[in-house]
Image 1 (cartoon, rainbow, N blue to C red):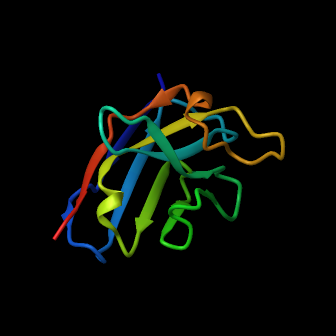
Image 2: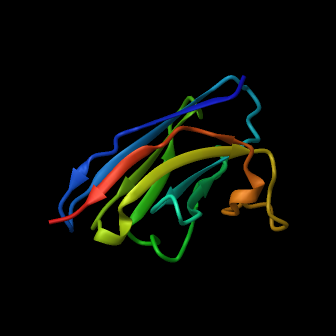
Image 3: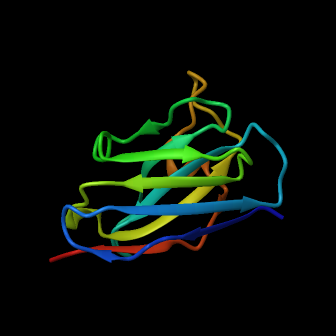
Length: 129
């Protein structure tokens, strides 16, 4: 059974940094993409932030976080981290990781929520002064 567990959420001031972690288990397929999503409120949908294939050297990012967020994985390829720098109040929300076997036509990992089947419960990030 595929399982994803996020951690690392906290309350920080604008300009601060956080490092989120997503630990995956229940599969051994090395071709799974993993992505981070954010849900700012119950009324708003989940927005894709960063996606990574374990065999890739770099992640794909949404324009809203490119240059501030960095997604990486470790040697196990089952732990994925999201380093978030220069946080803004607009970054407040529930951060979730998800995994899929689906790729975009160019072979990259998608940031489309509809392409992801397995999800974690999320970790809350609050950015305010």
